[in-house]
Every structure is written in structure tokens, then in C-alpha cells.
Image (cartoon, rainbow, N blue to C red):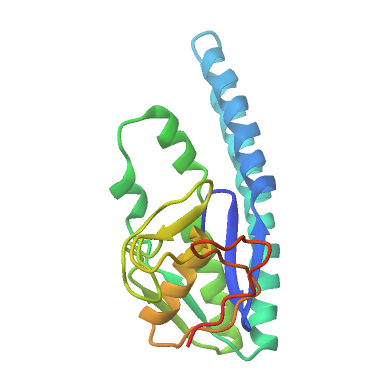
Length: 207
């Protein structure tokens, strides 16, 4: 679960869900709050009333978006008789806050834990299994040889040992899957190895 997308492996296929609409909603109301705060010195009562009003609207719109998305994901999992393996993110925001105002503003728009609570509730209602696993270094560890992965341009990571190259989100999914005790599944995402182009590669099939 990232700031602008949720990436899932459902029934052996990679599914990507954009969160740009949700991020835009938070950004719009962030600008509104900044304007209201400038008004607070002149009209404190009006400022408080407007702050409550727009905060409520932001929560409702964000929650509506998240409910719709998690319902869709839960439906697909139910259709494939699958549960969910998710990252253990408790306290993640507190751990990654670094004092940077820009970074902290970004994290305030990250709804990963709310997504997880919603999906877990929907899956418990439908009765599949939900399992949380340690997410540490899942996007930095090679799922084939356990070597270290280094940045390889954009969102791709490359293993320094076996040269496997994967999108960091897919890399994390494979590692989460294995940490939960399940074997890897075939993916519909291409990979890149030393000397091969991404476009000519077949989907990743792990043994």
C-alpha cells in the first residue's frame, strides 16, 4: 500500500489500483485548511466552524472512496476463495516521520491503515483468512536468492547477486507472500535480467 496506489496479487495476477483521486481529495482540503488558518486571527469563530465543516467533508469523501475500493478488492478475493496477506504497518507513520514538513504532509495523506481495517472487516464478514506479516526490507530483498536489491531506475530494483530486476511493489508482494508461508505464484508482470530487455521477457514464474 503506497501513497498513490494499492498493488495486489490476486489469483496469480498483479492488480494495481490508483489512489490519485484520494490523494487529490486530501490535497484540495489541505489548501482549504491553509486558507482557513489565515482567517483565524481575524474571525476565530468563523474559522473553527469552517474547519469543522471541511474536515467532515474530507473524511466523508475519503471514506467513500476507500469503501468502494476495498469492496471491489474483497469481492475479487472472495471470487477466488482467497484471504489476504498484508503488511504489518502499526506505528509506521511515527517511525518514518523525519521532521521534514513536506514529508510529514505527504504521510498525513496516507490511508494505508484505514484501508487495512476496512479490508479486514470485509474479509472477516466473508470469512476468508487475513494475515499480517513483517514488511521490513520486503522491497530490498531478492525473492529468489535473498540477495540485496539496489535501485535500478524509476521504481525498479535489481538484485546485486542474481541480477533479477523487478518493480519494487511486485518485489514486496512476493516477499510478503513467502513470509506468510505461501509459495510464489506466476505473475503477469515482466522482469528484466542482465542482458535482456523488459519487453522481451516472459512473466515471472518462480520455482
